[in-house]
Every structure is written in structure tokens, then in C-alpha cells.
Amino acid sequence: MTTDPNRGIAPVHYGTSTTELVSSQGRTIIADAVVAKIAGIATREISGVFDVGGGTARVVGALRDRIPGARVNHGQGVAVEVGEKQAAIDIGIVAEYGVALHELAAGIRRNVIAAVERMTGLEVTEVNITVYDVVLFDENEQPGETDGRPRVQ
Image (cartoon, helix red, strand yellow):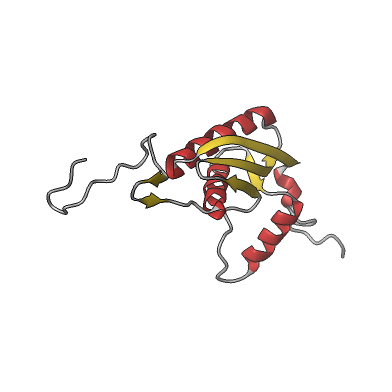
């Protein structure tokens, strides 16, 4: 191993496929919440994903978003099992209407596997995706908001 002569330490190379989580120098433990957060962010990057999580997770997330200063929970709607070398991931989504759901799931799966394996060195054994709902953009409008006029006089 070569060292950086200016700093006297070995350079770190991220993104290599030979990442060792257990070495003679110690163990690296990656928490479930970290893997869930990475998977949640990678899921939201895919076009056609309206939201992540089922009904309860989305309600809790919406309430949390209304609290001033509250942080976004990127792991919402994502459940993971992390072992020493592998991870299994379950993701629930709400899709936009008109998107081919099987293609959306394949795109999410590819993106999540790539992100988790690249960032953690864990082998992703499976990514299970549940589509909880399909949303039309006008479904989120409140009644009476479409034309700006009051409903009653």
C-alpha cells in the first residue's frame, strides 16, 4: 500500500468493488438507518415516484413536515435487514399515474442496488418494491382550489 508523502497516510479509494467491512485493522458496522436513508434517497431520484411509503408512513411524514425545523426522514417507507456483508431492502412507493409500474420498479431496484453497494460495500441480495397507490396530480388539490372560486355563496 502506498502512502501520501504529504500526509503520511494511505489514500482512501471510494467506490471500489473490493471494499472490506471486516479487516485485520477492525470492523465497519453500517447501521440499518443508514442503508434505509441511502435507499430512500435513491428511490426518490427515479422519475415516476410520487412518494415513498404506505399510508401510515406518509401521514406521519406529512405531519412531521409541518413542524418548523423538522428534518425530512429519507428512510420513510423503507425497511432493511443488514448483516455483516449483505443487505435486503423493502420499499413501499406511490407512483405517478401513467408510469409503467414494472419498469418503474426495475429502475428503482437498479438505482438502489447501485447506490447502496457503492456507498456501503454491502452486497444487496434483494430489493422488494410494493406499489401502494397511483396518484393523479389533481388528486392532491383540495376541493375548491381548481378555479379559485368559493363553492358556496
